[in-house]
Length: 218
Image (cartoon, rainbow, N blue to C red):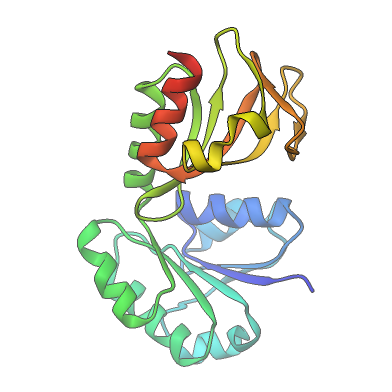
């Protein structure tokens, strides 16, 4: 069964989330109090509403009780964001992701019932820092306090069987995908080889990913 989403607040972050969900053919409702913000994405997101989603009655009328996941991306208005989270929680929305502007707001939102708090600037900065410190880390995404998913390219002459590498025991990481030089993605089997030109999609702690990158490319 397809999940349903509501994205509240259509600034740069909220608009990007709503557009991406729509392009993935998800059931998404985009909401903002500003008419211009709604009209700018209405060509991509079919279901858009101009409304003050910080009000409980408005959320009821929007049918959030049947929504699986709410994304609250109200920028520069902490009071409206807090009220929206409180009312979404009161109305029983099971998952609430909130965009926060500063780290100090994380605990506030979590106390109110948010299931996930994202600080876009902080996430982007960490991703950039990890990429520019290594010529072979192509992408980097934090998934928990100390864990990340990274794309590590293999730039040196190297070829080894995944079973022999025994990455889970030797490096405490998992490879969940391999992208070959032609750009084709595959879910690896133990019998597959990892070789020069491939990009490994790796899950593990930040330190372990760094050590694995050093092993592959130093």
